[in-house]
Structures are given as structure tokens and as C-alpha cells.
Length: 301
Image (cartoon, rainbow, N blue to C red):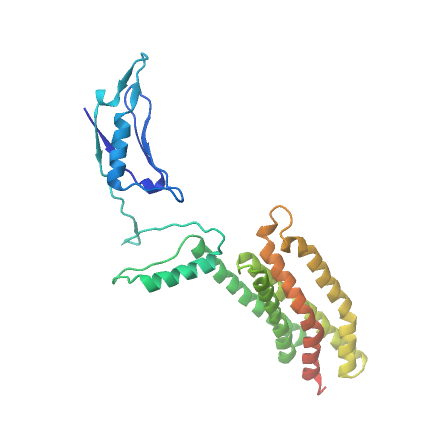
């Protein structure tokens, strides 16, 4: 009888094996690709596999042994070609694993190399999937959430103040806090990801809330009497303590996460760094920029 030994894809670390009646499973060859190691060509691999199978000894139930050639003839034949399709188009998938690199910069560098060194024929295209595609989809969803949050904040401001200028001023102060988040991420070398994006959205809401309290306190002061400068100064003096308590408390609470201390802290480290950067930049915005805008807006009252 003849036994056909089929060569499979060794890049997937597969191996040659077969089963015979009254015999145990037999591994004929196993090829592992290691960094700095060697590679076997298809021809040398077939020769190696056939040699190993021929030298294999079969143990029978009665305790005796027989060589493999006693039962069959060994012949190495090519394996079946696997054709993959996606959307009725031929598809070739290449996978890789990143080490000490962030996903965004690695993909950008890979795009540059492919654009400069590969000229695709008509009808061919290269697309990036896997974790990169999921990341880009998450970024698009979070960008949409940030836009909706901005519109909702503007709607709330219009209902509260019924004035375009002060509503846009408060919204501008809230959005400028994003600069602090991005600056903190850039200084610490942390890439922009889903976690840090969540921290940016949080900062927009927190700064908007503190600005609303300040403007509302100013309006209460104006109703009690006094000019614009006195009302603004009293509103800032009255709100400076809760603003500092909020900022300092949040920074101290998030500092262990920002430093990566404790089990699982690195997963939330981008969020903590983004929120801390937003608070550090947000305090001058609330205590200096917002009062200046309020004086410019209400100077004719």
C-alpha cells in the first residue's frame, strides 16, 4: 500500500502526522521558525520529512516493532492550495505582532513604505484591518460623541443664559481645555487612544460645568447691585475655592493611575494623563480667560 504524506503550510507551525491501524499517531516532521534561526525551502522540507518518516519505528500491540516501510511506501506530494475570498474578491491576509510600538505610528510607517516600494496593478488594493480598523472605528464613534456632547452643552447654555455671546464664550473655554489633554499626552509620550479620548470628553463637561457656575454667580451679583467689574471679581473670588478643590482632588486621585502604579493601572493611564492635563490648563482658563471674556461681553451693561 502507498501512503501519501501531504506537506502543509509550515509558516503556521503545522506538522506532518498520520494514523495507521494498530499504530499510534506519528509525527514525521515539525518545523519551528525562530528569530535568528533557519528556514527550510519546500524541497529540503519534503526531503527532511520523508527521511524522518522512513526512520520512524512502529510499535505493534504484541510488543514487536516494524519500520514504516514494512507497512507502506512514503511519498511527499504538494498540499492543497487555499484560496480565500472576501466580497467575491481574492484576498491575501498578512498578520504581524507589534513590540514596543504604538499601533498608529506603525501603520503610518507601513503605509509610507508600501506606497514608496510597491506599485499595485489595476484592480488591486491594500487595506488595514484587525486592531487598526477597530481603533479607527472607535475614534470615529468617539469623535461623533464629542460633537454631540458639544452641541448638547451649547443647547444647555442657551436655555440657561439665553445669550449667544456668553454661551459661545463658555463653550470656547470648555473646548480649549482639550489643548491641555493633548499637551499632557504629548509630553508623556502616550498615544491618543480610546481611553484618552474618553478623558477629553470628560474634561469638556467638567470645564463647562464650572464655567456655568461662574457665569450664574455673576448674574446673581448683578441682580444684587454693583458694576460689571465688581460682579466679575466677586464671582471669581467666590468660585475659586471649589474650583481648586475639584482640580486638586482630581489630580491627586488620578496621580497613581497616571504614574502606572498598581495592578492594571497602565490600562487607564491615558485617561488619567488626559484628565490631569485638562485640569492643569483648565484652571487658568476658568480664572483668567473666562473673566476677561465676561468683562468684554458685559462692558456695555
